[in-house]
Image 1: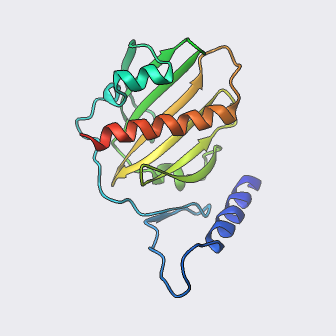
Image 2: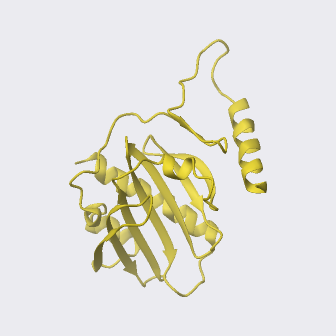
Length: 189
């Protein structure tokens, strides 16, 4: 409950701050949640139908992040995250894991409107698309969820690879960076 109150207060404070000129109307948000989380409108639809989640990073992108070419393809049936997944790992210069989940059965509102979600959500944009940075109570990972189309979103999870030496703040920065790279790849399709 306290977290929901803090999110509402933060959203109200952010809404009160604007760089727009007086008298200039701001665009209406496309979604809002009972918790007060408001996301900006999507610039256009970028459907995930037929996308291979393991192709979201090019070999050069994987190398720059420190991921190996080994990938694990799977599918998720978890509520809110139904769709294909891909997990990649790397061990040098640090042990990390990245998972892409293409949620193709429901939109991002499953996260922004959930009264049961315990993650701390922060609205952000990734390559111009509305997204949320989800900081869970468990400090060994962080995720970014990008609203790409009606009823679909891209989930990018960035985790410590098991050594538990990467701070959650760094994991969240890395999750955003990987989401940016994956969206660049999607936009080039």
